Amino acid sequence: MRKYDFSPNIFSEINNRNIILIVPEHLSLPSDITNDSPSNNQSIQIQYIKPNVERLTAILVNDITYEFDNYILTAKIIASPKAKGKVFIPRIIKNKKIQYEITTIGERSFEMNKTISSLTFDPKSEVTTIENNAFKRSSISKLQIPQKFEYFASNWNCCMPLLSEIEISPKNNNFILENGFLLDKEKETIYFYLRDLETEELIIPSTIIYSKLCI
Image (cartoon, rainbow, N blue to C red; front, side, top):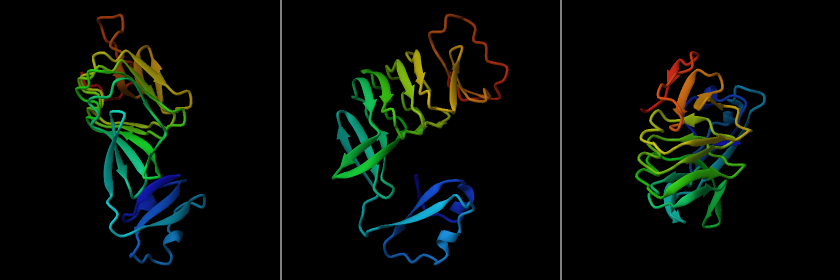
């Protein structure tokens, strides 16, 4: 189940999803709001937010900084330049007895980190996104792609000369590794190539239409 903020026409862009509608406690909604979904397979749940709830807060746990969205109860990894060694990201993190699903590796989260060696995830991870420059000029050499992962920002892979191992969850249906290239399932977009390929010539697969390489 995904959680969304309310905005005009949001339901027209969401298909076959269960929706949690986040609403300030004082706001009155139209009585027919739950009939606005385009699919019979869709359900809408309204969640009211109490006044004076600060939307974004952050804490540091084991050298990882988590930014919490207190409206939709998700967490993002942000500036963590001192995280060391084999970094493991759990499925959820608790703060003040509230559970937050970790969904995003944020922009510049591990930039200039010279002590990280790998980033791995809980087998049931909710992480779907890696943002721009997340590992720029870091020492990361291994990266896992969890089962629900679906989006790399355009400059996610800039200045990652040591990344030589990518492991894709067997339950992830969005990405594949082929001859050292990280591709989408349709083999139309290239996201990365392993830097230890034993060749001086980089031959891009002929099926590629789009590139998210940052060379």
